[in-house]
Length: 139
Image 1 (tube, rainbow, N blue to C red):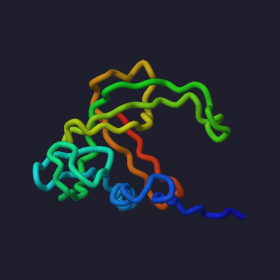
Image 2 (image 1 turned 60 degrees about the horizontal axis):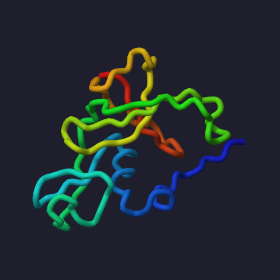
Image 3 (image 1 turned 180 degrees about the horizontal axis):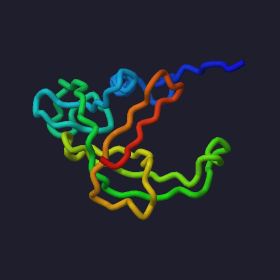
Image 4 (image 1 turned 90 degrees about the vertical axis):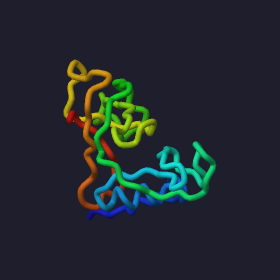
């Protein structure tokens, strides 16, 4: 018998992330965008870090990104990671949201294929995963 665990995004990350996780569940990747200055930012905040305006809305991005840096994690820090290591982690910057960077898992790539500056595409979860993961692969 399996028990479905509902991913409680607010308890895990806080209510400021609600728009992000709601959009991920609908197959979109979104970031906060200030309606006053038009700039996007990441970490969700009540005020724009660029102009201090409070008029913020979630706006989807294409999911295209550039690899800023990366590392291979070989030590399983938790019991559930033992079967998954090594894991390749990357910091990506979004093509249509300059300056917005996200730490993520890189998939379907061997370490010798990875290059800083390479183009990537987001792979969003399908279905109703208990804890959705956003990963990236080569574009």
